[in-house]
Amino acid sequence: MGKNKSVISRLGGQKFIVLLVVIGLILFFSAVSPDFRKYTTVMSILDYSYYIALMAIGVTFPLITGGVDLSIGTGLICYSLTGGFLIVQKGWPVWAGILVTLLLSITIGLLNGVLVSVMDLPPFLATLCTCMITRGLGSIFSKGFGISWPTSGAPGSWFRNIFKITVNGTKIPLGFLWVLLLVVLMAFVLNHTKIGRYTIAIGSNKEATILSGINVRFYHIMAYVISGFFAGLAAIAYSAVFSTVQPGTGAGFELEAIGGAIIGGVSASGGFGSIEGSLIGVFVICLLKTGLPYIGLQANWQQIITGLVLISAVMVDIMKRKKETA
Image (cartoon, rainbow, N blue to C red; front, top):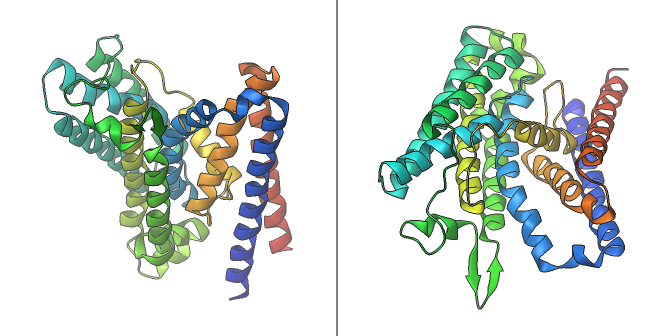
């Protein structure tokens, strides 16, 4: 019981600190640049946050098992290109393209789970391989050209209204509400269902979990299936927010999602984490990427500062673990 309280206290404390960082970044960028306070900037941050947040929700599960999923970034582009190819080039209805997008993402997630849990490949290596596979598949479907899903106002563009609608000339970010709903749902799954509890158990002590009679392979695979499924949702969000999907892109998206989850309190070595913490961590990443140009720092500095923030989060995790085991 004492250990459980320690973990809960640890997660709660880190989430509170990261939330303060988010508020501090908003206040800082708003004070330095009046342009940052514009509504268009808020919409830009939210547009960028949807697909990163959805990937972060999903990848939280493999991370908690002590693994990782490097395929979600290139996978997002692959799934989006595949769905767009079927809709635009083959004339499929949008709902069918979305269904195939999700089925393909689940299939890749299942493949990752089998490679890691059944074939016993290191998660880094297994998901790096599927990262390359999805990158190649996306280029094959698109034939090397960008693909646009139905644009606003065109037949079949209804899916864009899932994430953003315009009322009296003002854009309303519905996508943020969907992300919050999914955070609440997956937080419940993580904390109050067998899938969630056994995911945490695998990351905490896999050998003990096996000895207790739990079907570790099944729940380990499910962690990667969930990650794949949310990469598919992220692909739909990306297609809805951006006009064109370009093949060969997506590398680095997974690092932002994983980085956000770790900043939000998911342990880099597995065993614990939270969905809401991952969401808060993602907003640190999004605010840095959107806000730093307003103070004159371009892409190279953005990457350096984001990397330093991530190193700080990992160091905090390591120090807390040493303190608990001391």
